[in-house]
Length: 256
Image (cartoon, rainbow, N blue to C red; front, side):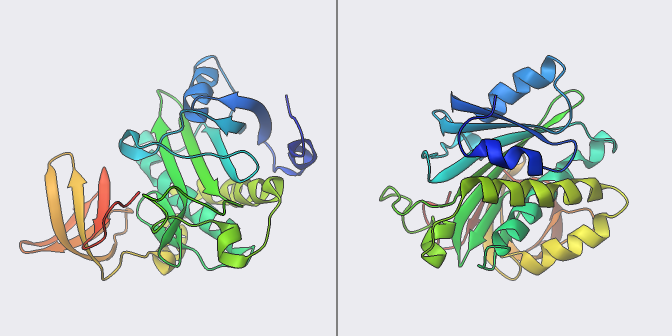
């Protein structure tokens, strides 16, 4: 069921993406996972006008305010080998960054799952794999003008950066349009996609502390390797990291 202004955006989505809008949902990722397990088709997009239990990586809460932000998840059934599915996080980050740039501001990618504008987080991505599908969750601050005090210094929105008010369906359509192109590039065209990610990587040359499954790593980011790994220069040399639960810039607190 499509409600409100989003009814006008649904026909504009590229095939096979199709939109389902709910007035309220706990977590769009969780609810779409249930639909995927029941046989939901590739390209199903579940959007909640109000998301009450949204989360980011590490289980952190993701704020979602009606009429100000977007909270939606996309069901992907990749044709590529499962070993390549983690690349969807970079493909999604690039798609969101490109969509934001189509409205004006330059956007950066904080490997592997955040999008920034001028050093502040405007969007978060949560990619979760199932047995034969992937759920790609996206939260975007579109028209938000006020954030809680604890994150006000590290969060921003498209509206705050430009002083304009945007149509949520227009932003949704731009993101899905770019994702429809980029998610196919996790295989044979990955090098081309990676070049665009590298141009927007906000971590290159920056001292960071990362939390990984094998412990904490501290060093300076050298860039992104050919497989999408983060290249970290430590006291022991360069280490390529496939995944990190948390990436913090040195000296920056309360990062989301």
